[in-house]
Image (cartoon, rainbow, N blue to C red; front, side, top):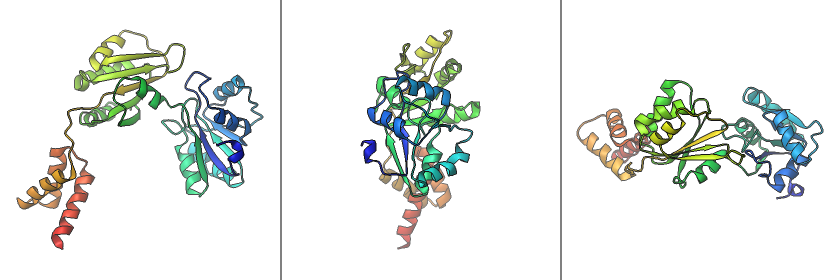
Length: 287
């Protein structure tokens, strides 16, 4: 799609380079050149991108970051409603993926206006594809939480997660996080991608224990994306198995609540899924 194809009044999510300024599409450059206003995380960083591609800013840059995004939603909706082409970019990669943008998209869409995208770089996908780990199914966890209890809760979930897991971590905390993960995931494969597309790009591949030891006494710099192999030994639990287990519990005299709790815990299935099936079984029995 060319900008000549764009009708008035749209929000466009535009992906920008992760590091190498050449990694941007011609359509993205055209949008940055012609948009009425561009919302970005940091106007100084975005100005570097504009300068590298000889795009005049002309006062069109506005700051939109995690601290002010909620308060700017009405403003963005009003601009789109007035017929403006509004672009949202992040410092690097695709807006809305652990970066500002999702709230604005939701607000403009809820107001009934067009939201579209000029897709491109994404640190999640980039790291996943060069990790050497399975890519068919994956779970994105965003930035690792700072609180120990929240991290432990995540680790408990990951023990039974068959999909590849992707998360962000700061270079200052990487060694500590990997050291924590050695206990539950020491033999699992992992890929740690650093400075993707930049001069000092590096991908460390091995087991969690191996990479934890490698980075233990090493200074780590730059943007970090971690890709962790899923639990390949998790048994796939189909609906019939869940229904059969529920039926056994009910036939033994268990209440619906107790049956759901027992089956969810024993099979490692989300409580809400088991509860919904229990309601369906109860409805069938009532017919």
